[in-house]
Length: 536
Image (cartoon, rainbow, N blue to C red; front, side, top):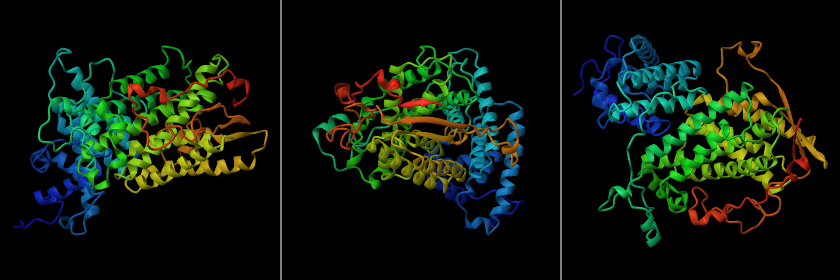
């Protein structure tokens, strides 16, 4: 039976349990899996109804941007304004006291996501920074490094850390503290409904199997969090490059090499059950994947972010323009050839996997959108290749990326800024095509548009673009001559039977015995002598 005040008013703003349950269902669809799980409590409705009011108000201020309920009776705007005002005022007051309450951190994360949804990016960044300081304070409060931490504290730390990787190019959590281990939640990879092969049964155990052991389980949460952590390292690196800090990327102590080693270690430590060749994506249906959303969303993040991070780390714009153009940093031809090879390989697989996963689930994760937008700048350069197959794949990748970003922007409108930047680059590409000659072409582009997709700066308001020193529109040029040396003779796509090109073989992660399938043996000193990519 409904209570007499089951209509919203500022005097009686608290929704009933059925109303809360409605918005929890929306939260599970729109927030929990993508972009991140703010809550892991089994009975979230009870928690929100009994937790401090600021947590419920923070939750409602976010969720009213996704759905409504008869409880509000046309007063959604009034309710959203009330919840936002009351939540932010109380949460900021509590935060200033420096008490590391988990509910306070959760409220800050909800408020940050609300600001992201309403395109108030600076507020989102600042709110995330507040949550990060609270978690740093929690780390400082431990008596010793071995102080035990409960699961809730561990999840709280990694929640904020993942949020930082989504918003902030410079992570504010300090690496001087011993951070908690990844959450130990494990899941059992599901077999496809259509699979009955002995080989598949040996590799994977179905979630609903009659008996399972710990050996059947994989730390899928830790798996996805680690690649998000590496992505955060990459975004920080990109930001330092944008500010003009250069290095010899092939040096053992370079940031580039450190991130590359982390990616290699991530691959080496990935459980066999999380190899793409054991996922059987081609045998699965959308309905089947929807039955195990927790597993498949984390699996999708691990796959896409691993390839995208590789593609951007090896970006020609970084290595052949930003770093190789520095007079004090002589180029290593062998190293540069590897970067180009890896950039093509991983950018192509990024968008191929995006298409595969997009056929199986709805992807609206803004972090994935950021990664895809950054990877698109790699394809933007390769569309000018004289190798028609490479150029065509790059153009297809760009089309897929724009379509995907438009899809994400329906849920997270701030992604429309990346769509605009990508379309500007594509308009510039058409101009470059017209200037192309048989001897080669000089690719002209605005580096600021690249940075808008790779590592955007915070905006300082409507007049930010006119503020001196805040945003340069530096024109960059890269000369693409009439030979594209990747591949030189027998690389990607040159042979019809190349196992890496067809969808029948999944490259990430290849089995140890299949490493010969990944063949980069065409490394040549002719890379620079032929004038392939000459930075101007």
